Image 1 (spheres, helix red, strand yellow):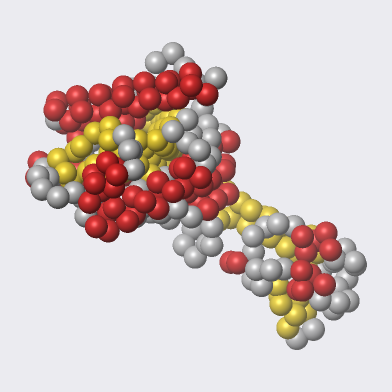
Image 2: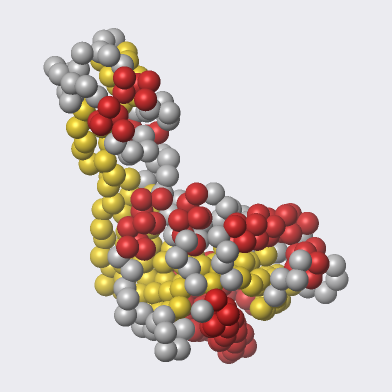
Length: 289
């Protein structure tokens, strides 16, 4: 692969196999960057077990009120739509857990009584396994949003890597949107159940909203009726791969093993999947050029 490729791997809920696919795509790509953006429950590092770990704190700005300058006008309280400020006992109280760090309260204060201070919301851990750079975002317990951590991870992305695999948070909320906005291709992972097809539709609607090229991987595939496969066929969605329901795969995965490293059959499966994604992304680039 001559040009860089950024692949975002999504699923409508946790437990569909999103991290399984992400980890193995990164490993078979060899020189790759793996970004674990599931900052509430990052688990990709459990498979890679990276060496040479470094840690970086991630902070956001929150308001600090100087009580001596504040005249109790409450303009800041009225301004904040997230109820992060309240006027209690003749003082402005800051509820940092729900603050969105917009800075509006500081701008609107007529007495310049509000400044900003840093508040740590989590960290970024970085290490490597062979030629894979492993980056994990970790949100502190109780924090409202991991978006600032994901922004920091993407901004610090290493441009030397040929392939970037973004292991997105589950679902289709704002934090997922932040994870996929710069992706060249989106890979949707789905389970063969009615709930699986419902969750597939969630991320299907999201990638269409962002006008991203995409395809589907059907995980835990078995013979018989597959609602997710039917959804793909009805909506003319390309199925790039079907990963079988396999006891050996499940055991390797539950033991924290990289299945493409341990099993030649799965190595070939993920190599082919990466090759097919690359062709799809290149074709899309040619069409839109």
